[in-house]
Length: 428
Image (cartoon, rainbow, N blue to C red; front, side):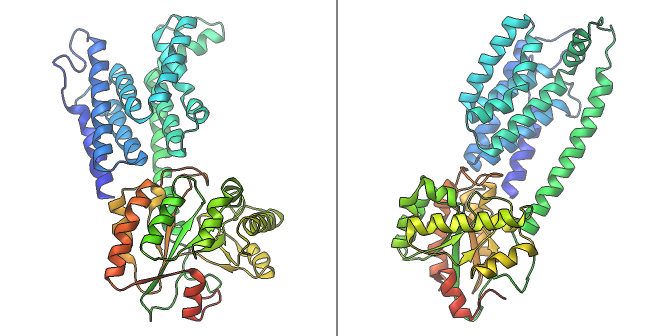
């Protein structure tokens, strides 16, 4: 996590470094082409830095946010909309080149219609999140596209205001109220940022670390034996689950995979392989639906449909259930009890859902893991949705983790084995 904060600070202060002699707003006017080129160069540099230092989509998005915020608000540097556009193009060139091509095509189309490059930039930026969705980008990129669209609207709000007058058939005032509206947007962005940080903090603390030690939830086993249970959520995934299985086989480690029913329908052969190689499968709902907000009927449907799909693919009837993101309420206890399920969470999370570096994943586990712990990983899953996502760093971290834990004398067991060893049946 320290690496994330470091590259965020570096990307913000990259705004202050002069790349070209004419970089920045100069007295008596400025060469906008050079400003855009300087922004483009900074965009390339900060994304390259993030790719080298961490190498995850989250890190690249983070440095891009730092740089663009620097272009909007930086000490003793004037507001530079041309440099901002150049920076956006630079970061997208390395992060999502296919989206950039689509955005430039939209810009060209808008320019043909409006003959105004500023309105063309604005129009193509507003469509950026939808372009991310159309090109099937991961959740973090869709969120980032929404952020980019917002700051470009902020930067070119005079065009928005002028267009609003034009649409209503009124003359555009000589003095627009753009500054006032920008202040409103700054306040709104600040509030959204604070809410996002608070939400993410609570999400990480109370969801991905669980809700405490409820007596009806299995979170860890006995500390009397040096065993840990490896668990993987959200699969199977055609890209990462087979690689994880290869690594587990190499180190003779058993694990429990909490499978999403619709993913099993897509990749039944991988689900079969999990069982054939001696691992355990659990129920993780059919569609990765939030069980906290689900109606009782939807809870039963998610549970039973996933159970049927997993049994059809593997021949195994699941008896362990893990709700997506650990979210559930008391209404879920009845359906689980009626079908003989144990509700399973975890005691130590790898944090890989944030797409952190493999080094950070290893450190997260080794600093916290102890005898009887249930370790949480993901072999699929996006930042928000239950499918997709980049789990390459999880794959890369796993051999180092298994080697170190074995060296410390740990044995890897399935959840059912941990329950038997601990004399547990679903309680602490």
